[in-house]
Length: 151
Image (cartoon, rainbow, N blue to C red; front, side, top):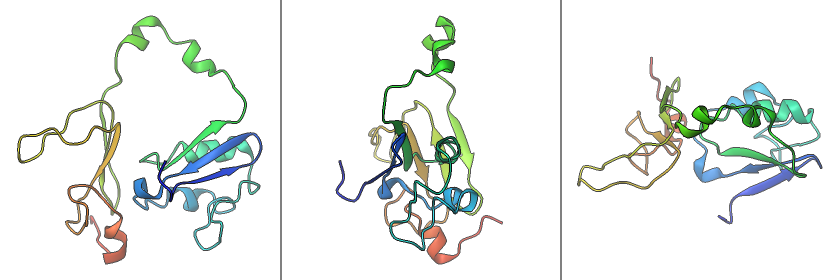
């Protein structure tokens, strides 16, 4: 585990934040400022909303910089109701163009670098569109610092 990663709990769930994965899409604090407030320390207040509301917002994170687990085992009803055919087939790759931000690619895919070698494997990756990232070709959030706009 990266030493910069953080965990926050309300007793029912634990929310994990991985800052290195965060592209500063701002979804979390735009949607639920009572829980996610970058102006406060700690910036996550797990008492600020219901568990269901926190889960809803965490699920919106485009890069999984925010994730959660239930503190006690809880069955996922939807997953148990899937047919065997659905379980066997991988979901399609999703490419999301973030407004004034990166391309977020989610799914199982292979990325090949300019040198012909396979790049690191990830289920979610954010590719820079502004050209200013210090971690090319990946987004590091620099687009927000430089005021880059996709418009």
